[in-house]
Every structure is written in C-alpha cells, then in structure tokens.
Length: 160
Image (cartoon, rainbow, N blue to C red; front, side):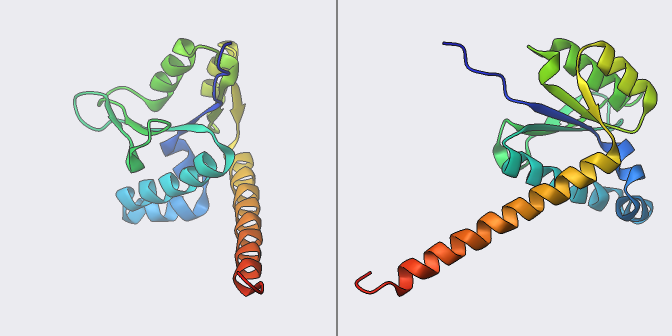
C-alpha cells in the first residue's frame, strides 16, 4: 500500500515578510527577528495542520543552506545562495516534488504564482495565509482549552 504524500506548504519568506505589515515594520529594524517571527507563525501551521513546511529566504552566502529548526525534517528553512531567488528555488522544489499538486506556495508575486501553477502546484496569497494562520491558532487554542477542561475534570473526579 502506498503512503499518501504529505501536503507541502512552500513560503516565499521575503515576499510574506514584506506583505504582512507587522513583519514589514520589523524587517526594517531587525531582519533576523522578522525571519524568526515568520518561522514561528509557520511552525503553528506545521504543527496544527500536519503540514510539511518549507520557508525559503533569498540569498545568504555562497551555497544553498537548509536548516531544520526544532530538528524535524518536515519543517525547514532554505537560504538561497547569493544571486538565486527564493522564486527560483521554490519552482525547483515544485518541479521535483513527487506530486506538484500536493504543493501549495504562499506568495503575492504574480509571476511566481503563474510559474508554479503551470507546474501543477497551488498558490495562496499573503492575506489568505494570514487568515489560515489565524483560524489554525483559534482551533489550536480551542483544543488546548478542551484538553485543560478534561484534565481538570479528571483531577477533580472522586477517586481519581
């Protein structure tokens, strides 16, 4: 029996950081902190939605660099080599995917969206990504509150 492919969210890091007002303001002062905040947000989607998530950032160094914050292979940061754009790397990842249809690219770049959609992947705007993130956060908070109620009930139950 074949194992179903996990959905893969590919995030154009610079594009999303420039699109979201709170990250755009932070980006002007502290690029690494803006990246960290975007990563934390995408980590929520990874954890709450059981997605494979790759955040691709533009040019840092001579070689392509891959990091796995938190140590999980399903959550990655890719830093492109200087002179290579995140758009290029994302298109390569989509074209090499087992199933491009399982890839969803988060960007507001019209050219990038057309390119990855021509390869068979889907796309999502920065605004839709923010909405998805907010809903995932609400669902996760609801699950956490329910779990707390269950734990409280168990601790207070007679004979427990």
